[in-house]
Amino acid sequence: MRTLMLLVLTIVAVTGLRRRKAGEKLLEEIMENVDVMLKQRSKMNLNQFVKDVLPSAGCSEKHLCQAAMVMMNTNLKLSMLHRRLFAYANYSGHHHCSVPASEEHRMEVFLTKIQKCCQELYSKLKHKRHVK
Image (cartoon, rainbow, N blue to C red):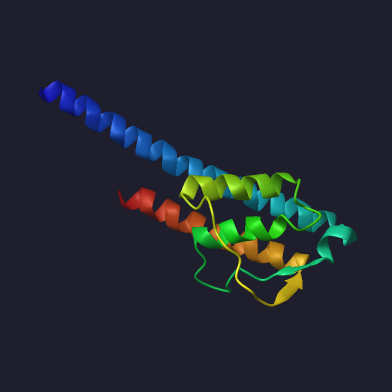
């Protein structure tokens, strides 16, 4: 019985670690996608106006879900960034989220905020992993 319990606890611990690493990997990929888009400076994409759903500070997984929803109405709706934002929303358990009425900003500002949000969430995940 002890052996079975140790096996179960080991499986739970490893699964939890893989899950956390998956979140880190998705956030890294989102940040890389944003970097590429900002460096390309495509006028068609960066001058478009979108709803501002991301706060300047204190962003959460829900905000990335809302960002994915906002991107559905843009030229970037078929991009890898959009797919990865939805993947992260699913990973974090935010399958459905609503987009509140808000001001609009240029896509370039929106992408920069996505990147900052991902950096913030990435730091939190890394910190949790080192604490445990």
